[in-house]
Length: 462
Image 1: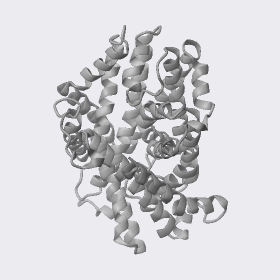
Image 2: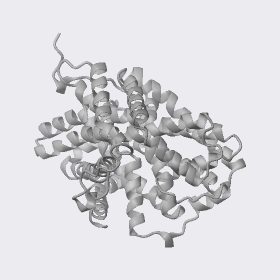
Image 3: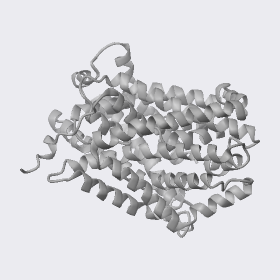
Image 4: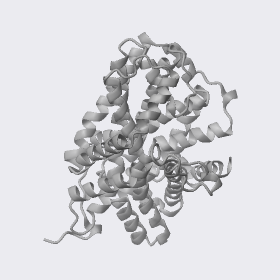
């Protein structure tokens, strides 16, 4: 029998609200929570930044997430199929189909370099288990990091291993793959995180971390820090990546989108805060600096792991935690692409998933080599904004600072201005009331203003 046309393809549906929430929180929780959030908070004074970040999660992130979920469930297809269906059914301008294409291009490009950092977490998991951090001081740890990421064959293998582990899950489909691994990986992630926090209560400077994270000093906050908190909130929630549209397309009608989005925002924020309580007590307890930047995880913390009681175990647990967070996010990056490929006539899901994984690994080779053989290559050095950036830096900048905010802006404008009240009301179960009024106001005015401010600051602020 011939395969049905793409528009008639029937995807699997989530077996329960819990399965959907675990998978979606897993897709949102990632390196943005456990790697980026701690060092960005550390660089911007701690508590004041954290408070503003949390405010942005719920005031701006939540409305956009609800919009993505409503769009996804309304279309019941991949991001591309959903936008094609909505545009054609309601006779909207074809321009809005760009949301669908960005929602599969962003996760594909993102995976190519995201897997590079995920490979570092695998590498450091092995180093922690073997006790390689014993006796490290700051300079030695910095040298160790440079040596590890500068080993091209090793990093290419680990990059491929990470992508292959994601492919194995996604190829098995929603029930046999994504749901099954999410039910194991997410509880494991929370348990490890809670264990590390409890350990810090007794073995590290927990009170100093509490003061740093929860006693605000707004005098240390400037415009750049506020915009960074906004960008971190959207980045952490995977806004604009395409996973929310895709995962919500598999959502039965009886699931509440608003409640689901609120739970996802709470879970994602909780992980970010717990990550701070898992990291900063160790940093303060061992006299290290919280403002070390991107090297906080891979350079600063190994120094502490090499000195503390049971450091090999704690270090191994920490990098296992980092890997799990990257892993569930990697699954969320591959699924939007495979969902679209699966809708093509005659497509076979396992084959499409393997193809996607292979192309992502192939596309990521240059990013991997940006830290070794191609470290001196700056492909867009002639552009002032890209001067001195390696290929890894360029692709990271384009995805995180151009494509993501543009897609988030388009989603907000489409849901706020283009979709009619009846369409939105049918998905949200309400078309009036204070929350709906705020949601629509936020999408029409607040989110666009915020996204434009972020882009202007990033592109022209320096």
